[in-house]
Length: 260
Image 1: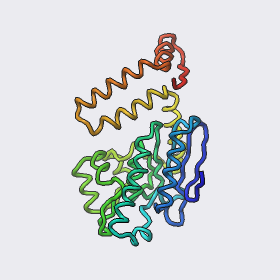
Image 2: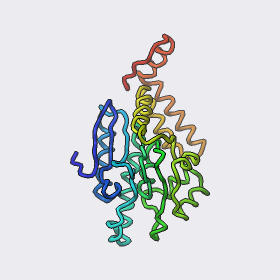
Image 3: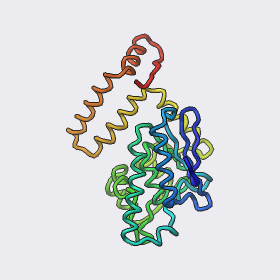
Image 4: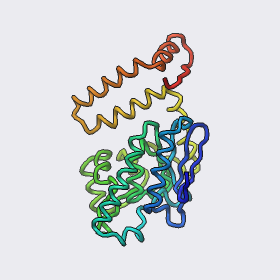
């Protein structure tokens, strides 16, 4: 991959994607968004990668928002196209069949909050701040904020955050269910690795099926969602991992999953 605005490394089967524009508080321009698409594509398609971490370089920001100097030059047609590009690439994180955790190390505002919400879960440092401040600029979120935020925190709270443009603390984000855990900044990376290491020790196909069942069922009726679950449940019974997992349980030993 040819990356200028991201750092990408693989350690212990975990890809670490770091947005590397600290001088701009890791603001998202078009080039960075496209590179995020390349990075999550590599996570999805590289069999050596079992999970991924997404974070920002520096102590101040995960992603402080979109690059306003770039957005300010867009007209209606270009802005719509930019929104659709961001939505499409952000959705790749949400739909990735391997677990992705956002480690929010500072400001996660606007596009940064939207990007964090696309990850399967979020761990925040105590210094993290979240918000959708687009209304302060006479704008609305364009990368999924009006849709994912109410699904995570509920309609009323989402509208409050969207319409006031207020920032909230990491603790408040935790109380609202926007983040899974709040930890000291110096333990953030270790906490992310610890969570993912635990997950990738499980049956990889089972992990994949859980992610897909939640994704496809979340916006369906309960009846449809249960049918989706039943199908994945049945699929799991056709895997070698199921045989290994149940046999290991009965034999009181640790399962050795192969992802088959």
